[in-house]
Length: 383
Image 1: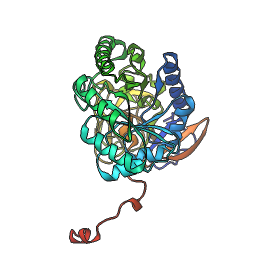
Image 2 (image 1 turned 120 degrees about the vertical axis):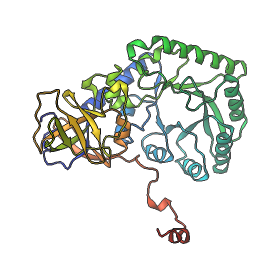
Image 3 (image 1 turned 90 degrees about the vertical axis):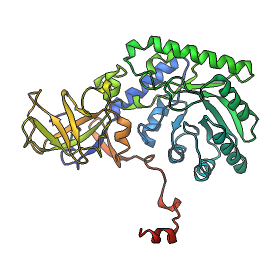
């Protein structure tokens, strides 16, 4: 089957492919949109976890990066000196790793509890650092975030008064808005009203937010409908996936990531099996992505309808495509971020050239040297 880079006929599959031409175009499109409306772009690197892709985003116009883990922060500090940790760091080891980031890094942390705030303040003081704080506000998803503007003001006051911290504003994630881009106006309008009320309460308390960090890839193209928004963290749009195309965030031609797989069996009528299973694609189902877990690039009617660890089962009853055992195919996943996290590397290709890139931000620790096991405990458990 055509549609994969020349020279990869002998690639060991499954392996992730990144179309750099598309990735660069995706980054440029987001940068142009945010610049048009005076909004900063701070992409979340959890999508790609790659220094090379982060640099593409920064070169396109991103003004900083968002990370989720201390390890991602450590890796991305090699490419950017303005990082937002969009996850509260709890525990001594995580805080120590964050405080050990290069001094030049302007670190901001999002949190929604006094416990996380006081722990961060203590670590910052001990390290002689000044760390920014964004108070996370729940705007409808019901996952994390303070529930009232009054609570946001209380945490903001603590951050403003805590030695070692600097209150910078608020953060939110509108993950509850997952309708098609063309039908989001009402929900985004309600979100704008909620943000306006929160910001007004903060301003009355002398805590007007300098930063209002929000946005998501599903709502990215309606970010200009949020007057208070100062930056968006949309990250999936560097690659896109079936979830994004299903919501109208991107077109099929803007999907820059796929899994190269090999057809290993056609023995069962109406089925073809590839060597990309749940350890390459993940078992995430999204209504917006259509049926199944992935689709065949160039043939959207062919879906991966079942996954085991090493097997992906394609339903070929509704297509005239008749695969051959040994044939290479490309699969577009429902959720690219989870698929990326399952890979050791990606093959990046552009203009007929390709090379293998590591995914440096994957995992939790930079090396085993960080882990000092208790040998007596380990042996007592037979490890």
